[in-house]
Length: 112
Length: 115
Image (cartoon, rainbow over all chains, first blue to last red):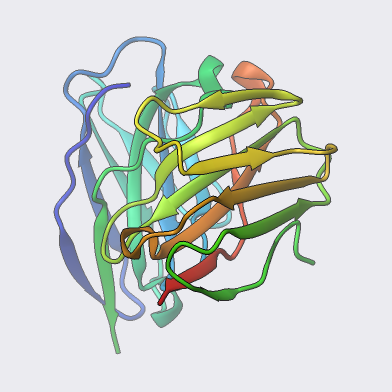
């Protein structure tokens, strides 16, 4: 799986959009970008994933650059409950049974 | 409704005394995973079962074993816990259907303390 680089921490004001970047410059053509988050003392939670098109669901939007070397997770209206560690993971979808390799993630802190 | 259930949430065990952590799922997923997460670190995969097939990560210590008696249940056995095994242990499941398998579901974890 390709390596990802994320900032260790970020702050965002409550009610604002939180934009979390992820670099994955060695991504392969068959690798997807997945985002998970982990709220303190809970198990990780799936947020969204994408291959090359931008994706949106009820939780977030995922913007992937045209060259696919980086992506941004957007939480449109951050709340205090969005404070968590956010993990960007790149992997081949067909290896979904193999488990996840977590990097260090970004600790997002939503400020009131 | 909880879909991946781990019991207990907190477990205290004595140094060297065998301990078993349990996980159950209501999703009927093919794959069940165990992760170890030490303080301030990311989760690390220990092993997983695809149905009854056991897959061990290369660097998982022999002190850690697992059992999956049926689709719904999976156990993590630590034969002789050391102080370094104190961690949160996370169970997760997925369908394991290749490209269709987009999401892993995690339990709340069991926090293990070794005294």
